[in-house]
Amino acid sequence: MPVSLPRYTLEDLDSFPDDGNRYELVGGVLLVTPAPMPPHDIVAMRFLRMLFNYFRPDQVADVFARGSVEIAPDVHMEPDLLVVPVGEAGGERWTDVRSWWLAIEVSGRGSRVYDRDHKGPAYLAVGVREFWRADLRSRCVFVRTTVEGAERRVDTELVWQPPEMPTPLILDVGALFANVRGDE
Image 1 (tube, helix red, strand yellow):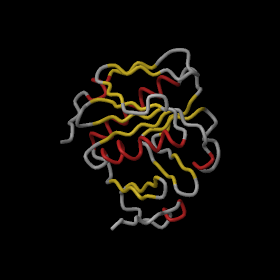
Image 2 (cartoon, helix red, strand yellow):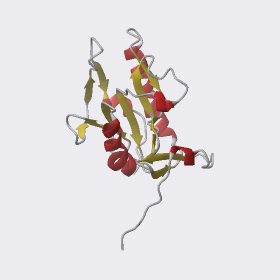
Image 3 (cartoon, helix red, strand yellow):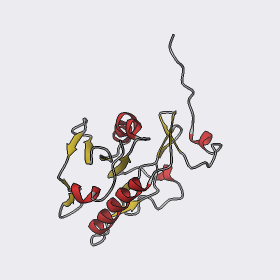
Image 4 (cartoon, rainbow, N blue to C red):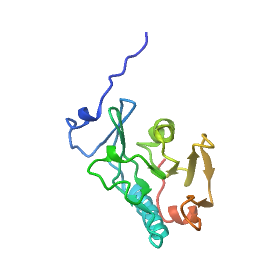
């Protein structure tokens, strides 16, 4: 017998408790993940620092640690980091944003399956150019683009160059995970 999953909307999210869990919607399907642990936040902050320093001289993009990819009525995803062109997020709501260069998830025990199997493909489907998934257990970054589709594993050096930037960002994957405990 087929299982029927309840469907939710952005309006429904307003009634969910503020209990530390992350509540997200992918095509109306509710994804719930626990609050992150310190290793997650260390890696996310290292990404934030690298991206901020990369974009700072040219000021062509904004990097958000608490951004959302939101499309009414039933898509609400909260990547750990979100990169959008400067001025794109100048409105009052995340539903006003329609151009996303990069979404990053730091995947641990509580979010790995959702990030890999549901959110990664969903980001690309709604128009995010590129998706990175930093896996705490594997200590690598998995990259997905609209061109490649499937995840590509990067263990040493990740090179990314948005067309709007004159030089690439070169990210040392080992440094990203240095002195950070993985999760098993």
